[in-house]
Image (tube, rainbow, N blue to C red; front, side):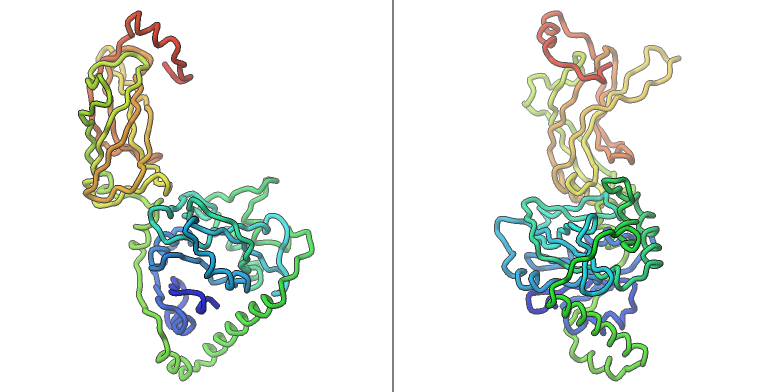
Length: 411
């Protein structure tokens, strides 16, 4: 259905037998990438890798249980824009038969960011989603009422969809609706939760949906009858390039992937910047804030993703207070300000960041540690450390600082 409006069709497949995939898609697709599936994968984890398989300026994404409306197909060529990075369309959930859809909350509206500019500088992925994977996000996008029809409730029975709920919830806790119900439970069980009469699908879209079911049934019959002669004739007309991809290749594109030990190899250096008149870090007054210029260098073999992709990598500081005597236990570190990485840092690359450093509210001897931090995981352990004496300000300085509001967590 997309062949007449697409310059390139890339199909990424996993669990189906390769010969079935090639038989079904070989004549229409330009590339078929059969990727290795792992039990811990969710579909959303595969999307960042799948988008990188596309070579054209714009990408439109459709899943194998969706059918485009005629209005969407007709509008697609004209949606390319120099002012926008994406279009958000709506997905309509068919229910009962192929001629009706669920026009009620939460199935409507089901907004889907499906058309995106193929630009890595603007296309990012959020890590935390209902499926525990990644969803794309772009700036400057527009909503369009050009629907896709979702076939899940027609092609899968209630038992299958109930099992699907458990599979999805295993990746991440389900997002609650406004009334507290599980969104997964409601989405995939309209037999239990739908209360309104479904809305009619336009007749021309009904015919297109039925054509999809008809062709699927024909392929199923051909496979059951082992009609190899038909398959052999189709091979000669295939246009698709056939490739494979490993699970490791897919995981390298996912912003929420675990980082190996080599990914934490870094150099962190405080520069001799003229930004501050007092660049000597050996002396601070209590609650004094300075802006420090820090250079970070990636000396490992993994790319550090930026904060927009949800990687949660930061440049941060922490203060470790020296105990007054050797018999006292060492106190825990007091974490200071943190700055997210503003862009990718590939192996061998470096970047300069401005880090606000605020001294503790209690005088004494400290170690100031400026290091990279992977939130909820670990500090890199490659930071720049300084012995610092924090002292109370002089009377004149104290009067000047009296007007500065103090944070609630000052100690």
